[in-house]
Length: 148
Image (cartoon, rainbow, N blue to C red):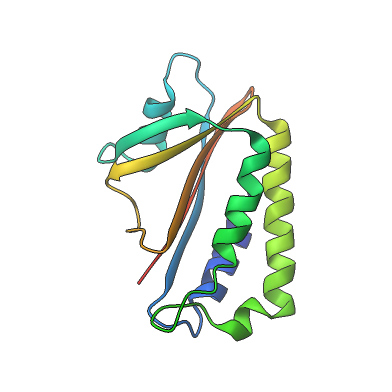
């Protein structure tokens, strides 16, 4: 996952929104067979996170959830800017991020979805997702959320 692209789309979604803030990050750690998924998540996000659950997920389920989250239109009290969502710049970045995600999925031998019970890096309100992608040489943790 390209961290610079994630930052750019996060910045765009935060621009001119109403009570709306987006958090998007990808963390990479070396693959280690001796560590559980929970341990790898804590290694990436810090020891203060409390994992609420982890489950295997079909790779095909990931891109639609990520796309639906990033294109969330909100409501009258909290939302990203419609101008941003409709901009060519946003649409191009979204396409690039989904391509990065597809590449990460393709390189992965296992995809897991997880949720945090406590210690989330950004308090989720409107949407959130969190995935762990295991490949032969690295683990990628992709987490995103939006709040007010």
